[in-house]
Image (cartoon, rainbow, N blue to C red; front, side):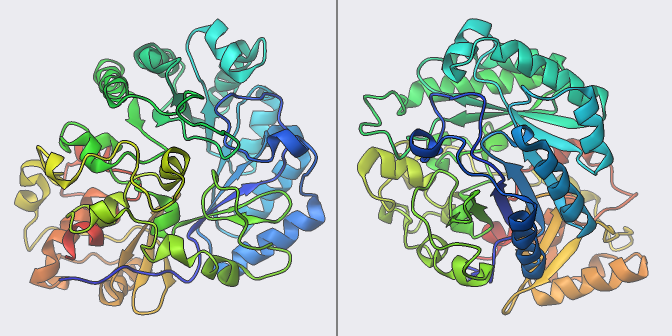
Amino acid sequence: MSLGKRIFSAPTSTNLEITEACNVKCTHCYNFWREDSMGGNSLNIETLDKVIDKLIETQVFHVILSGGEPFAKFKILKHALKRLGEAGMSLSVNTNLMLANDDKCKELYDLGLDHVLTSLPSSDPVLNDRIMQSVGSFESIMQGIDACRRNGIRVSVNHVINNTNYDGVYEAAKLVAGKGAQKIFITRAVPPTYSKNAEADGYLMEPEKLKSALDAALQAKADFGIGVGSLVSYPLCFLGDLVKYKDFIGRGCPAQRGSRFSINSTGDVHACVHEERSYGNVFEQDIPELYDNMMPWHDGSYRYSGCAGCRYADVCESGCRMSALGAYGELSSKDPLYVGPHAFTRDYELDPDNTVASLLTEDTQLYAPKRLRFRQEDGFTLLNIRWGNTITISDEIAAVLKRHQESGASFTSKSFEAKDFDLLVGLIVKDAVTSPDLNIDHLKEDVGLSLNLESLFMK
């Protein structure tokens, strides 16, 4: 069944940059303003509260607090966590952790912060410091990770790769796994808008080098038990074998999916954090109006024409649009890693070997967890499973989940129509529906971030 592309009324998650101030100057940094106003703009309590009020009004589920370096404005960071937590939003902080210590981490944990995403360009201290352009940055990051873990904060690591560090993925994953990090993201460098020649500047990598980096990550996962993924989508046709590379599937392009929205410290908004273009200012317009200004991102206008007819187009969204812009000068160009719909060797399996489908009977007791959050849209419902993981479902399925969530009563597969059985299996795998009768924890680690079930099943 074809649903067409779901258009949201507003974002489901927001990247909120509280400051431009930063203590490093990474060579791959996407922030377009860094040459002109490095550290010149920050939110204050008054402006921050205005932004948060609008996020609450819009029913945004998840907020990522970033910068710059958010620890550089620690008072503002604490206020943001307090306000957003009181509003029932889930939270994360993007930070290089170089300014973190036990006292600060304990304060943030007590305010409800349970996860940070940090950066580590290399496990080689010399190379790491060179990429971050800051002597001693490696040791400071290591100490920051330790401080987080001692104080109960989960740590994920963003490992941005380019031609200078792609061969160090395994060692980086080994290092941070030993530090207690839960996941490492193997994220290809995106050509920043200030780069005049993306290829000459080293932002475009050969596909073979990228594949070797992903292979190294998968080996590290097998050897050390650390989760792996990417924060910049890879075209699925580049991956080809969607069974082997399933950890790198699911995120797609959050700006094109309509889930993500970025607000910088001046109030200007962007569809993608890598983007220079502003679609207005949050202090002058409401979020739904600003979001509507980004419609070409949401309605498929920027998809590459060569992806037409691909069965994974709604999952992949043509890969990274900003990489396409950097390589070819147009947002609607092909991702530089594009291969084509002919390149798939194995299809994606949400439920390998039909594990859940074979265990699920008419008597299996199912539950809708209390952590589920819902937002009504025009003709469908947004279901937030946890953190930034939000998918689309029909109003009818939402009604079933809401009813049983409120009552706490169990239900069975008979509450779903036969045509929705595959979708129910997907909801179970993605932990949106739970059951004490099903032992499937080994499947859940393989589910891509925010993989939208309707994009797989509703064709």
